[in-house]
Amino acid sequence: MKVLHQIQCADKLLTRGTEPSRESCCPYEGNYVKDLQCLGRDLSTTIIVDNSPHSYVFQPENAVPIGTFIDDMEDQELLEITPILMGVAQVDDVRDHLGHQIAQAHANALRGRIQQSVI
Image: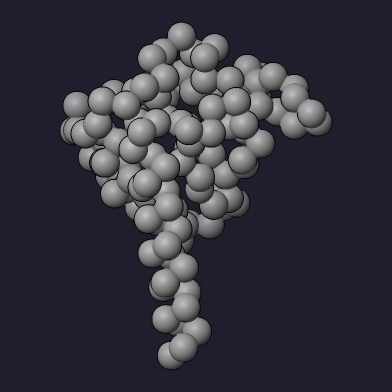
């Protein structure tokens, strides 16, 4: 909940319950796709955080990929993407910002894995 509080404090409202669920998805090539345009929001200020790349195939430029959560109380994924979420809260168009942020986050994660394997 602390992450959600930080996002809300950044003057961006995170509205739970209005996010796309499976019931509001479009079947597309054997997968369920969340079409952000159906939300009626300005896509320059809308992101989707999802573990399935198939879910955001219609708007990949709005996506923040995240690992799968399956009852792991030690899961830190939201905390790990907090810098990305806080960064998009400061820009006019999240689509321009996300590509760079996601690439940087993946590079940092890869560096961390490489360093751990060397130790």
